Image 1 (spheres, rainbow, N blue to C red):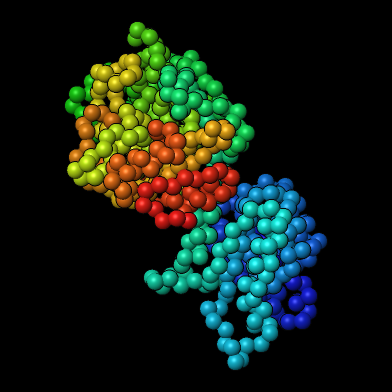
Image 2 (image 1 turned 180 degrees about the vertical axis):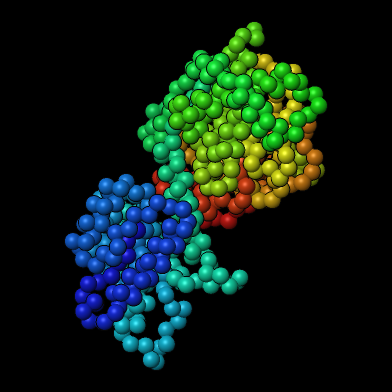
Length: 471
């Protein structure tokens, strides 16, 4: 971030510069409190300082530039700051006083509250220079209905900070791709170069032998600790036998090693196997370990769905979790959609202990093993999908809704009762109009405000459906 002012004022109005620098310090503290790694260029009040600030932001490879408008400044001393590192700019038009004492205010006091004066000028300069920018206007010391200082403006600023953190997480991510995509699912086929080129993320192609080699060297102590963890996290259905449970825990240990050795931030995986061979046994026993990884913030998407793994990482970085999910069924009586998958699930966003079931049959897949059954906690939720356009450009698709109480299918799958403000048929028609993939990341809370900012920072389109208000 950087603050702006006009050097000509400092000699004319005693104490003004120090006062405005004090306000900027408050803004910097608030931003740092939102979890960002903050790079400050201080107060920029000349074109020379503007160029130095631009060089600083370029060296630091910042993801978002925050311009705090402390008082009037010419646009010529602001534009150079943002031209070298072409990332979106957030202009903070935050007035210290809620109202001026009009009959008694002097020029110095007015200038201490004159942030609105140059914001239109900056907006014009940014627009003509093709700089992506957004303005947040409000009060520096902003009351809300609860009497705290986090009103609408500061909430929007926090959303921008969280969005920037999420974007940094994706751009610096290393996604593992283990095995291959489920054969025939054309919506999920991904161009790895597209992911590298459009997001800056890395895709590490892995073989099943990479996993097997790590499963083979799991120690007895590691296995015992993992079984203890599984028993702590999950309710275990009486039908789960010791052998399959121990094998799932051993594979989970191997997955931990795989993630550590390749420094992975996410994993898309699937392998079919044949006639009960060792890779089929491995592929059928990944759900428990990958559910534990997903709960740790390392999202794992089945069926080789790399784009949904990206969506899951975004949702997790937005502090919403992100569970691997697809559309199951439409309920036309109670008007909701049943959504889930045969694992893995983000067990950290359930309001009850998930259950492990032993399945002798994985529908549409080979092998048998232990699977996860759970439901996302009741309350507000958001789903996010990542798809691509006919031109090969990644696109986000999202909707807000609610997770409803009620029974779910006891079939060893994650599943939740979700409502999006439209009838199930109307929602499905609206959702499918955007050309989505059939998987989504399911997270908790209302996340559209932050997702809109993520889309701006990533320079991707975001399609919104359901009953959400427009931006």
